[in-house]
Image (cartoon, helix red, strand yellow):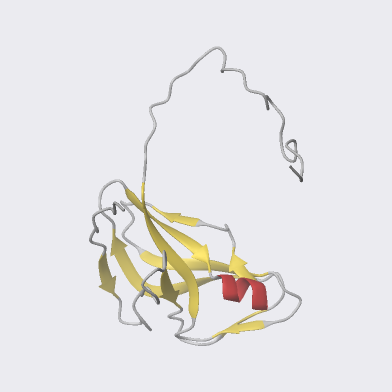
Length: 152
């Protein structure tokens, strides 16, 4: 089995950082991000908030950081990310913050040090844009959402 080389992710820890990103298991694809808020943040149903993580990152060229929800928070408490998956570009140097939303009917309190999201480091493929008069035909064609059905 062939594996990719490891890359170096440079992290600057800010004074208010409550914990560094960390892979919790050997097989984890994402590293957990920790809430570095000074005070507890209580989210009412449908309320949104930008949670600081207390870190800045420097990605290698042609890489991105994807910020994704933690499945446990999502299924148990209805806490997800505002934009589902956030992208941090290689040239961003500000603090990593996580936009969360409470999709449940109950309030939820985010405490300092709580694992709130996961960060995946992924290569970026950039495309050359080619303007054409027509696209190739496919069986699906212009069939949109749900056009392939639910069952095989």
